[in-house]
Image (cartoon, rainbow, N blue to C red; front, top):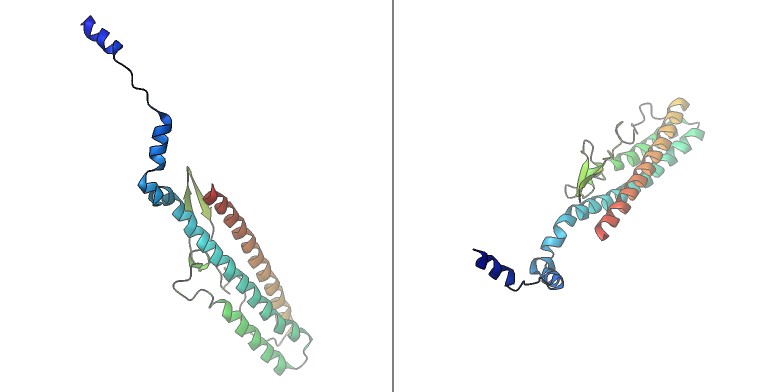
Length: 192
């Protein structure tokens, strides 16, 4: 028995060359094709695509809200009720265009901007990154820009509409700021 143990102790020990193992891992065909290395990055890329599209749609929405503000401002100084009614129609036309920004079924911003959308969760190494949705619509839950009920017949309605336009612009700007921060963070995770 002692002879067997003695032979094992005298057997040459094969050393493992760590650099050789590392080189083998780097030559792994699955890694070269992006199968092993890109798998975890794909959710980040999808989230970045949604964020890029959301930022573009929010920029369009901001432009449409500013267009909608012009007839409201004109109505504030207009004395003719007929002209104010026409300005109310122009406001309503511009306002309704906001609701058409997400009608395309293939729109990549839908997971973040569609009314009723849930949070977008991106799995990162050891953590989840959550991106909150922003309902891009003229509904109260979104930009809160209702149609003019009185066709701008009263200065009260005009003042209320101007206040809502200002609030809508602030909401768009805030959503763009948050999504820009989300995008910057995820880009660092993609690069690292």
